[in-house]
Length: 314
Image (cartoon, rainbow, N blue to C red; front, side, top):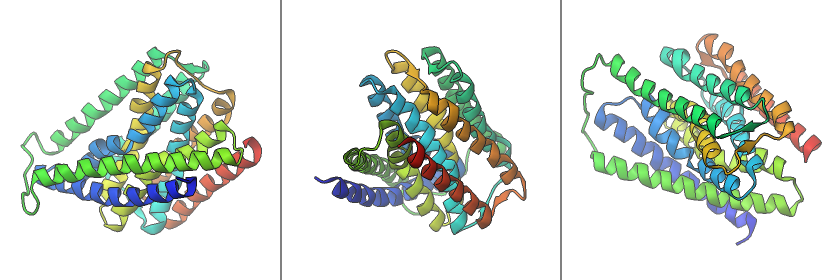
């Protein structure tokens, strides 16, 4: 199958899978009385991070650890600048106070931790364990916060409509579909990039990153269009946090010799990721919303970065 057909097939599967995933996630939240934000931050986020995990572990074991790091850095730049900005362009993002107090600071803390742990030029197993511990603490705090907001009361159920079994089936089918779609998309995109002579580093930071971000992109946009904004934002923020803390942490643990950080990634891409994460804080605090103009600025920043990447490092 040609690279173009693989890309098209991947996009079709992703679109269908993202729709099913959003329906399953919101249905599960309604049945158990769990907020869509929590479902997006945990179940959906981990599900849509599976492509990054698969790429990272495969790259680390096969002797291409730089691709694993580049994929995560590139993916989070796509999430923060491009997908979030594009979502705000469609419909301005209004943020809940708890998102400002916890979710976004957690995403920023993950980016800061990655930068600090990478300063010695590598992520070893100890660094991986530190990141995994952060992912565990983050998940526990998410669940604890949900219980605290309910005052310890059992969550009220709303069993109208499809049952919990149907919601779980939709969720599983949706996750499987976005993973398969992402794999097809990445395979086709990488083959196309290789035929054009694009370097591995640039491919990891752009083609592979955008391909493995496709589940987050499609899920966020579909949830936005369906007005499930809490699920959309929760998925995006949660995926960005888990990509670093869980995916990169687990990859560093299983990598035979750790994950060396290429000098150019440390000097430019990681710095940009840190700057992008820090830049979200004042934008979110100002009016607790992202306007269309701010969304356009985010998208423009990402387009400028990719243009520079191709022009200078391809």
